[in-house]
Amino acid sequence: MLGKLSANRETSNSGDQPRRLFHKHWQRWLGRRAPAANSVTLNHRKLFVIPSLAGMGFVLVIALLWLLGTNYENNLVFALTFLLVGLFVVLPVHTFANLSGLKLQLVEAEPTFAGDYGQARIRLHKSGKRFHERVRLAWPPEEGLLVDVTEGRDGREIRLDLPLVQRGRVRAPRILVESRFPLGLFRCWSWVDLDVEFLVYPQPKSAGPLPLGASAGDGERELARTQSGDDFAGLKHYQPGDSLRHVAWKQYAGGRDLYSKEYASGSDARLWLDWDLLAGRDVETRLSNLCAWILDAERAQVPYGLRLPGQTVAPALGSAHKTYLLGLLALFPVQGVRA
Image (cartoon, helix red, strand yellow):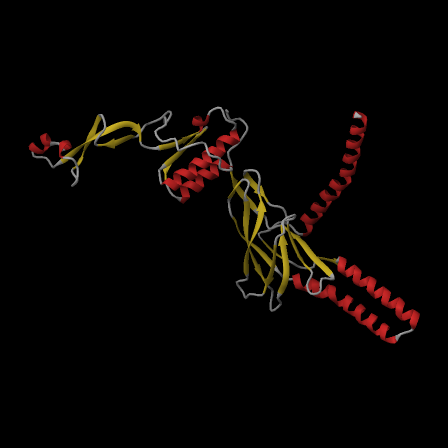
């Protein structure tokens, strides 16, 4: 039994090798013929045309009509056959022209979270007065989009989705651009590399409520200044509404301005999202938990900082702060990090 399994495995591996070799050579040839670029204009070097399945059926119909006209010597059947042959000859030119001159330009590859779809914003421009109709763009095996490019100089912007599984920087594969316009008898296509690279954040996984009041670890502590703490922290200018019990009457009697006393509560007023608070979990789980905390803190509008091994970011708020911290999590190395 084991011998049969090993034999089947060897047979499948030997069958995959020619396919992998062909794919490798195909990608290398495509790289030379259509190199990666943020802006690509389709031309005869990047486009390929072959009859579709419907086109092969059309050829079969022509062949049957030719045989029918020959056997019965029917000129009307011959005329119909020649008409269909002429149509079949000019169709690949029109199908090719429908994609030729189409310009694709990468606008932005938007960051996303692992397990979600990454969106690439792509602008399509038409060349001259020619329209580009029924154009399909996709990252196979995704369905993609079917669009018509008939706008003016500004072109048309689309969003193309790609499922992303792992965090980090993910380079997208080539985009399939194809059209079967006008009659579907020929297929014209190209594989376009717009040099799309996604920044993928860890997938957010809840680790419970925000660690408010948790130990800030090593370093300076910022004590919360209130009027109900235990330790005297200093004086501040009196504000209307401050309790009269905390007014510094002695200083006021000495001829100074009116001040109020402040007290420190002894707890850290800042929110620290600390790597060490998640001890005992694997690296990816910690990153997912920290990611969820960052989103929760931003929604709650609580200034938050991040402590990672070898790196500390001071507490702050705002979209730029959130994006920066999520980027650190996305590019966090796995090897050489303590668990």
